[in-house]
Image 1: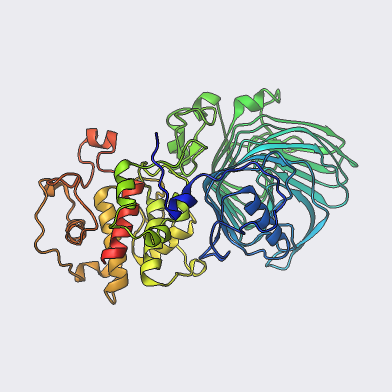
Image 2: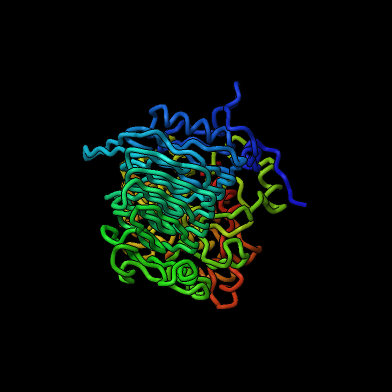
Amino acid sequence: MRKRLCSAALALVMAVTLTLSLAIPAGAADYAGGSGTRNDPYLIGTAEQLARFRDQVNDGNTGLCAKLVADIDLGGQSWEPIGLTKTGYTGTFDGCGHLVSNLCIDSISSEMRITQSNGNRYDIRVSGFFGVVGSGGTVRAVGISGRVTGDLSSSGSGFYLGSLVGTTFGTVEECFSTCDFTGLTIENNNYVGIGGLIGNAQPGGLIRNCYSTGTVSADVTCTKSTHNVYLGGLIGLGDCRVENCYAACPVNVTIHKGAQRLGGVTGNAGGVDYFNCYFDNQLCSATYSAGCHFSSLTPFDPTYCGGKTTQVLRSDKMPGVLGNAFQKDTQWVNKGYPILAVMTYGQEDENWSEWFEDEAMGDNINQETFNRLIPAELQNKDLTNDISRLEFCAVAVQLYEQMGGKQLDAGALTTPFTDTSADVVAKAYALGITNGVSATQFAPYTDINREQLATMLTRVYKSLNLPGWTLATDDQYRLDYSGTTPFADDGDISAFAKPSVYFMVKNEVIKGTSPTTFSPRNVTPAQEAIGYANASREQALIMAVRMFEKL
């Protein structure tokens, strides 16, 4: 039986995925935490809280920010999109690896005039979990499942439909959809864009590390044969940067009058800046005798993105091809296709070790402190799992801000990394807590080991307590760890990490794995295979609490 902590912190961490009416009940708590700013986002753990957030955004508070702290079941009820305003949604919505399930899209918005930061205006109708993501808006690390169905006919302006986003001018990264577009009929007297994930991606937008594995099918009638119907497995109509993405979904459409533009990844060839994108060409060839192509344009051009067989897309090598945001689907949660490392896929329950419960509920841990130091990224997660670089950034930044009593402004920070836009990474990088694995790569989902954990915690201490310290000037500062006894495996501790390891040991923040060993890093292939020296989420949390109280 899994242990359950009764503290307020773990009460918040406990699963709150509910299938309830989306009407907001009178007197309900607004959110699980937060104030809606980028540096203190709302914490959302129920369908009611998500609906409340949607309503606030659509009432004009377009820059509100939020993080999910649990999987959310929308119960199959009709969903009104987030971001139905003239600027669209301009905040940061971080799913933190959670799934929004039983989404039902069966209606389309009234005509909207979208005004972007460049002054351009667009008259459009949209539908999706998000309606419009505006310039500067970000949606990341969220999965969508459910259905898109019904008569979504409209007239007048263009119509963009995606399960996650109707149209985007902003950033969408590390997101996926398994939604099925079925029983979908559309009549429109203008252009139509339908995508498995995104209906339309506008110039300036960025789609990165995403996929779609649902079924996309529709019956579309246009009033004129010159009106285009753009339909793609990932994006309907795109005019943006798309990188490290794939689509593995049949694309079926019956077009009446309108000119069809069909593709495995996207329905248009021109205007899209592709990099490392793929589609399952066996699913597409089952739909079109000529394979995936852009009808009424030129045959499909593999320089835009490449077709792969089902076997290749499901192979052990494909996650490496797509990049470090992906991993092998060993549990068959995605039909064997690559999955996103950030996502839980509903497979994780809150769980922790007996030692963690003993210490977390013991006399040495102040419960108020413990509650304050759990970041959203670890809520409702299996704490016995190894902690990733991104997750530890969240722990370290939370610790820094709580110890220092001040928050960094994520909106003012930039990084050189092209594989994540997570605010916690930007903050940790700015503080000197961490750097990348290369000039442009952060590798957010690579596990960290115990000596790295000690080093990063020590950098939090240095940043707060040593005036003038930076990562670049680190060798000019010395730590006092006199009186500590070297571990038997001291020779395995990297030279850069030794001062941090023994400083943290001296101050009782970190302990050895035995009275004589520290287990700093994986030295042998056998150790690497079992993650011998990997740090766990619960170890990181307890060490953060110890550091807050002792340093």
